[in-house]
Length: 54
Ligand SMILES: [Zn+2]
Image (cartoon, rainbow, N blue to C red):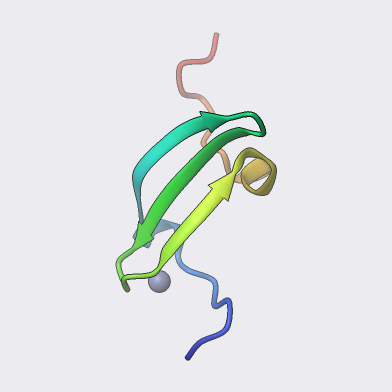
């Protein structure tokens, strides 16, 4: 078993995301089959920019 191996963001597919009391939680699935759960706090600087922002 691998231990917290980082996955290529390009291999991650956003499956679903929803808002909680702590912010938006995103569920992503890697092409290798691993699921990742990201919260607004964890993503931070990884959030895509330039989308729907004026
Ligand atoms: Zn992976």
